[in-house]
Image (cartoon, rainbow, N blue to C red; front, side):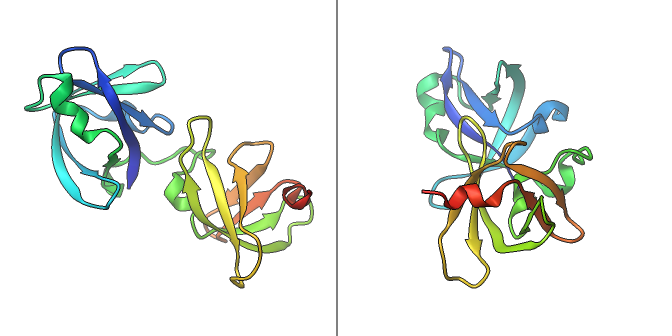
Length: 171
């Protein structure tokens, strides 16, 4: 499961930035071994010696990488974590991966909108939900994953409430 994206190097000792959604790594303790994946889907193992929170991101120190130039090769890679090793989300939290496949329903009418979440797009400001028609025909809709646009989700019924659905089709 993707828990973050590796950014640029930080400082002169070989630390690299990791941008995550939420506080997934807050309970992680180094040293640990993780999988990283490049943009082509190629995976490899890294060994994290140190994890430090630094503002809105984490700093990772990787074993065997002592300079910014050495560690920058991982920039843009996704950090993957085994699902069973992740902390269980709180009642008002959800992993982005769990949103994919949910059926969109109207918060106002509680009826199906005949769209499903097909992807959660990483965005520096907030995640963006991509929804496509169940039938395969029609417009793709992009909705910011924010409380004013998205209501509750139910993993048992596999539904996600969308607030004021009509606004996404206004020209």
